[in-house]
Amino acid sequence: GESVGLHLPTLSVQEGDNSIINCAYSNSASDYFIWYKQESGKGPQFIIDIRSNMDKRQGQRVTVLLNKTVKHLSLQIAATQPGDSAVYFCAEKGAGNKLTFGGGTRVLVKP
Amino acid sequence: EAGVAQSPRYKIIEKRQSVAFWCNPISGHATLYWYQQILGQGPKLLIQFQNNGVVDDSQLPKDRFSAERLKGVDSTLKIQPAKLEDSAVYLCASSRAPKDEQYFGPGTRLTVT
Image (cartoon, rainbow over all chains, first blue to last red):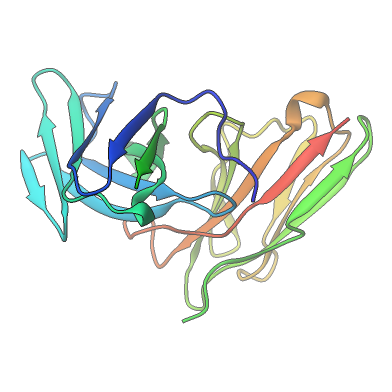
C-alpha cells in the first residue's frame, strides 16, 4: 500500500517493549485531545481521547498523558506488537469542534 | 456497520485538468468532513457539512475547490483546475454530530503531474 509519509519522525521499538510518542499542541483553549493511528492505505483510526480537565487516561494497552502547563501530550503503548506499526497523530478539538492535527510519528516495531 | 466509503481510491491527472471525489458516510451520520493530507503531514480540514449545509469552509481554496452534499448523505469534492500542489490524499470522515467521534474513510490518493 502507499506510504502515509516518507519524512516523519520515526520511533523504532522492539516487540514487547513500551512505546512513548510525544506531541506538542498549540491552542491552550482546546478542550479535547485525541490520538489517531493511521496504517498505510487507510484513514486515521481513533485510539484514545482525553479532556482538558484530566491529566491521564488509560485504555487497553494505551495511556494518554496531558500536561497543560507545557502544552504537551503523550501516548504510551504497552508491550508493543507488530500490529502497532503505523503513523500516529495527535489532534486537538477547539472551537466549533474543529479537529486540528499535529505532525505524525512513525512507529516501527522490530520483531 | 459499514464504514465510510470513498471512490476512486487512486487518481492520476495532469495539471489544469479537473477531478471529482465521492464519499458515502456512515448511515445516520449528519456531519461530514473533507480533509486534505499532504504526504508527511496530518490531515487538514477543507470543509465540514451538517446535513446539506456548510458549517466551515474557511480552509477550502474556493477558486478551484468545490464540494456539495445536496441530499445530506453522499458528498462530492471537485478540483478544477488542478495544480501540482494538490497532490495529496483526500479523506472523508463522518460523525453523528459535530461533538462526536469522527470515522474516516480510506481516502483517495490524487497525483497531479
